[in-house]
Image 1 (cartoon, rainbow, N blue to C red):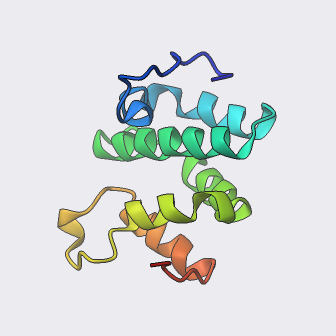
Image 2 (image 1 turned 180 degrees about the vertical axis):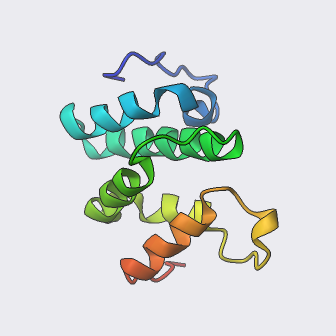
Image 3 (image 1 turned 120 degrees about the horizontal axis):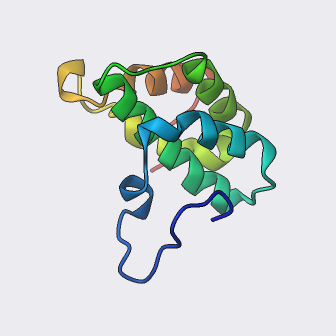
Length: 119
């Protein structure tokens, strides 16, 4: 990847979650905006960003405008991130206590983008 992350190999299952790092969210967001990325790279980087942000919320280390920036990028590239948003939204779960920390944001994006789940 173009932002200094280890390259996944054939044994790198869930690579995007393994390399997530809540201390690098600002760097990841800058890379998403500045680095020329194809759709596959944007897809992978956004998973890293969301996973990192979920961890940051969990440990109460959220900074600056991360939420709004993530929301903006997801809405701008919703065609790339549609499935990712649904994964993190956990729509089948009613009790937010059983969800990810980013679930409320993902549900908000589904509403704002007027997304419908694809079967």
